[in-house]
Image (tube, rainbow, N blue to C red; front, side, top):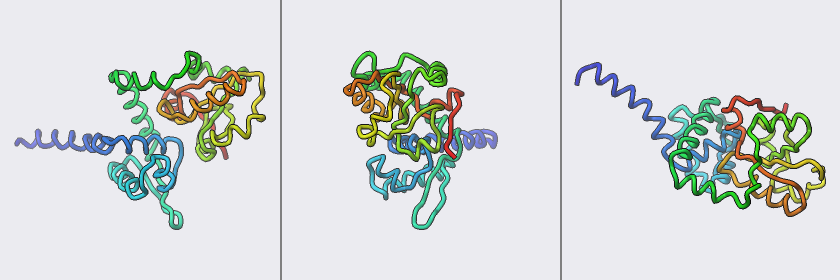
Amino acid sequence: MPANLATKDLLYEQVARLGKAVASPKRLELIELLSQSEMRVEQLAAEAAISVTLASAHLKALKAARLLESRRAGRHIFYRLADDGVADLWVALRAAAESRLTSLQTAMRGLITHPTELAPVNGAQLLAQARRGEVIVLDVRPEGEYRAAHLPHARSIPLGELKQRLKELPAGPPVVAYCRGPFCLMAREAVALLSKRGYRASRIELGVAEWRAAGLPLAHEA
């Protein structure tokens, strides 16, 4: 094989390493989780509903492809995305799949239980409404994820605490909930609970990764 062709093959092979690294549903889920915040291996395993051993193997494969970084603190190993570009890769890949795969489109429509469940606004419109106090933006992810990054003006009430903390939400303005992105079910559950309690509630499919990829600002806790 001519040297220039061998070099060309090598270049494609290196790019293909990333494709191989993300060619697993659970690895994609781990990337989505780490798009929220740095997490321990045990946290990631619990969220992805897999064993710690399997989670560690997936994480090591993603790290070998330079998509993740890790650090040790005592007995625990923490993983984080190598940079925001990894989150952007996940957002772009998911969006491409949704635009081309009818089976995914059907599954996504199945997540909508009533016509008004999704808020009829885009990210920029929601940001403007939240700035003016016209809506309450509710982050129902775990508090650690909220502290790492959240939508501006959002309030943090994790889904597991929502029923006990409903009094913290004013009864007047409509509530727009969000969680980790289009595949996350926490905002959907929050909207169902809020609607039953008499709130005007809807959700957006955007999470912090999609919000950032759209060029919209994020807020962080000190």
